[in-house]
Length: 174
Image (tube, one colour):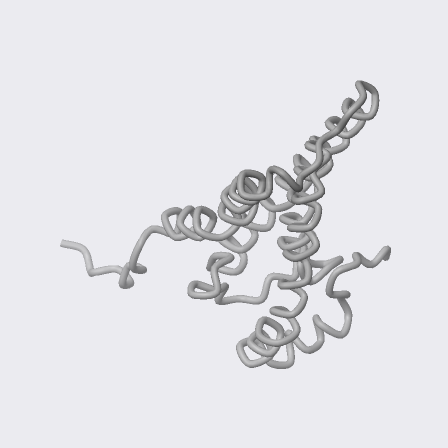
């Protein structure tokens, strides 16, 4: 008979990741845009003209896919390096400062913003462009008022040094 191992963590890490993705970015990128496009259909715009529509659709797809790839990379880093999820109720246990986090403090929000802007550009939608701006403003306020102070409390001097060296939104070049 073998000795008992360390206590198992409650819930599957994969389950926690999927739940946080389903509740947060899926709502922001799929549910809210569908609702807005439906509720504000009379106020919305779409591309007209073949070449303009084609350019918008190609650009929108590139932006969306780029955002999705970056978002996915961030989720993997949160799970493997940070041992947590993107959800505020199940945060990382370790500071994540690798990969895209070496260049910008909030690549996951930048990725979601890229997906939202990609949707707006793909469809030529003024309503979704407006939602993108609102999303960015809400997140900026949230990071200033809640996220960053919380990270300072959780990670102390390590986060303060990281914050001093890595810009919040615009990636550093070097």
